[in-house]
Image (cartoon, rainbow, N blue to C red; front, side, top):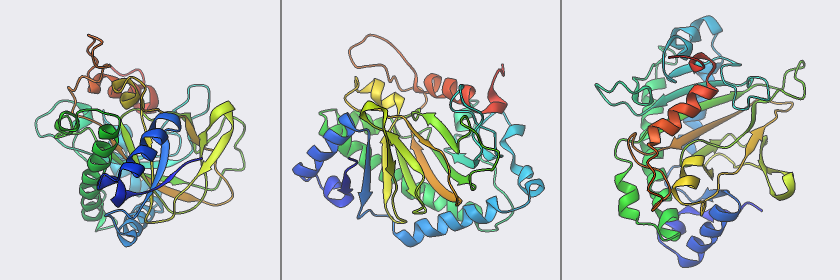
Length: 298
């Protein structure tokens, strides 16, 4: 079962809630949050501006096509990602934006691309990004504190986070779709924490014990939270990265994940291992394996 958590109680350090989240992070790898500092109306506005962009003609969206770049900034057409090499490319559309660092040559800090239409797209998305970034930092601090990690140390690793905000548009499952076609195929997230806003339409599934698939959804104004490979590694598997997927159904749906990842040069190897695994190396490797325009690039 995926627990539903009161975010304000978690951030206030309520011992029973912190323990519930600790167990969920270790055993399930997923939870949902309600009573959060981001109002439902603000999330609805974000979903609406992404939807307005995704419904534009492809020729208009192509002006910000990430396939023209060496990074993952801008629009990704259907089939631009392949999260599972044993499945076909995912049939969803995406729009990615992230943390910019002037003068950096790292693709994970690349300049964002913004469309001209909708005219308020950049303002709405940047405003939400800032709020989701702050909330994700607070949630992660509460969770790592709950498993006994040094909260101050973790917070210091996120002052230039490789945090990626994405709009996902899943159309109705295509008539041609077969057993290897997904909105997004089975995968684990790559980084630390994912803060996922949804439009309330079911579709996401989490792989539970024994391989059974468990539906997970949240109404507008609540969030699904899950954890990535980097945090699982960093915490010596005390926090779990759980496989999940979107098969797709009879109706379209949208979601907005904020992938909260640390500074590029943070060492995310297990504490005490003596190893060095830079966050940027892990993340860029996974991006290069996933985005079709980055595969096999120098």
